[in-house]
Image 1 (cartoon, rainbow, N blue to C red):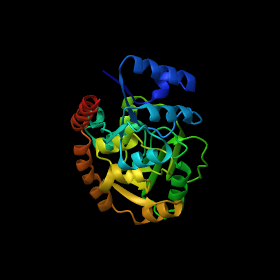
Image 2 (image 1 turned 120 degrees about the vertical axis):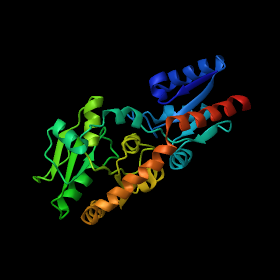
Image 3 (image 1 turned 135 degrees about the horizontal axis):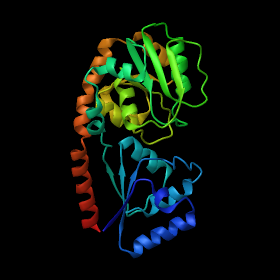
Image 4 (image 1 turned 90 degrees about the horizontal axis):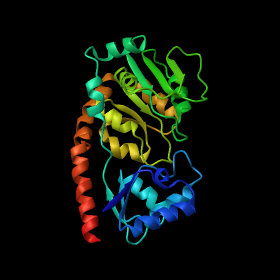
Length: 286
């Protein structure tokens, strides 16, 4: 029997004593504890790091979504000597998004969202994160010398948005699935201006799923998860500005073509097979 958790704070809360009691109950029931680690610390409770220390010490098995993420967690947390590890990538979401692709492509998605056509539209999507430097991307586009690039930001919190017709930003709000899909299909590339501090971002699963190239920072998770499906700019706003000034349609096309390999490696059937093999191995070894 197996207890699998993705976000253990939702199963046991963030109180350390309650966490220990839940784990004791799981042990008493004879359950193997498997944790798929998406976060370095709880997203909504960043000060509750102690409960992750408890879970890492107790987990019988851990699935990491990258070698990068495993190295980060092993450097910061003390796993039990009994803990077994596997690196299995996160699956892509193409099967959920592709059915919503408009027959008229980018132009139809633009029209449905009320957007003016843009030769090259870049977008920042997904929930705000402390490690997602939206201001850096805004500043980089504002400084670039091109008039054929637009940046649409759907992840705005309190960033300073200049009076620049190439930059459109709206406050972040949860979007329904169809609206989110239209946003992706209205883009030519996703910008992922992440800094260090997280383990993963689910946005990469959307980018691979619909074949969108990414303009990405040098954050280790992105380079491992996206490979040639991303165009890497470096670390600073100046780096991103230089990348945008030099960006070509051929670069975007090459990165988009590379998403095919990423999709093949992150099909859910592939993920399921690897996960089942790991689970069988963990249970057999026990």
